[in-house]
Amino acid sequence: MDNSGIKKKEFIGYEYKEVIAESSKASFLIDGYENFGWKLEENIYEDYRKNINPQRQRRVILRFKRNRKIVNKMELTRLQRNFEACVDEIETLENSKTSAATMYALILGILGTAFMAGSTFAVTAQPPHIILCILLAIPGFLGWIFPYFIYKRVLLKQTEKLTPLIENKYDEIYSICEKGSKLLY
Image (cartoon, rainbow, N blue to C red; front, side, top):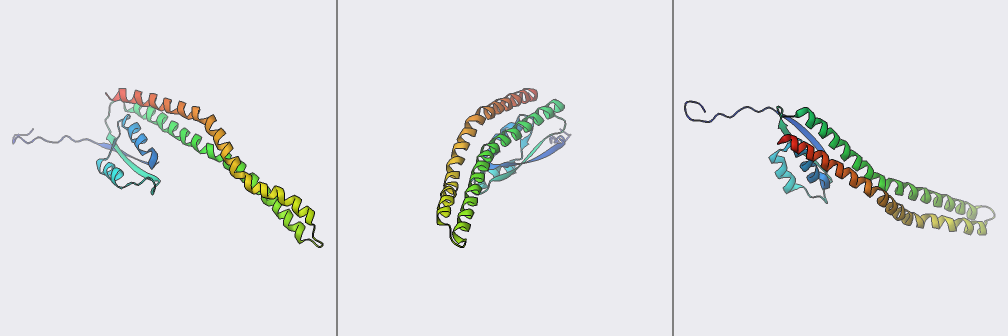
């Protein structure tokens, strides 16, 4: 306070961080970054809550700030990097569920198309080879029908295989966030 009784505001230097995230993961990331001293800027938070429609917009920009002179800054930064690495690993694991399934389905679909091409060439040859056309068309049609079922089956297997790994990463994240939270208070 000065002589006039007016309380002076103390200067605080901030550092800023922007995070681009899936809208479905935004709340998780906001909670996580708060454990490392970051505060979501209020005006952005309001926009996030009011204007983001998860069905319409898939990515959001989260803007954070924190005091530059925060206590235990080096340890918080180290924990934050571990947190970000775990989040990236979870995203990679989530993407790998569908990538293997997509690969198998595409390979089978391409093989089906190759058989159909052979069938087409057999029927357009002079003289037409109808029996060969039929023999090549059967695996061609099967190669067009089965990719959907292969995709679903591989996706289910990958999900069963990767879910425990993803859960372990979430447990690791919660442990890291707990450590960061204890350093703040």
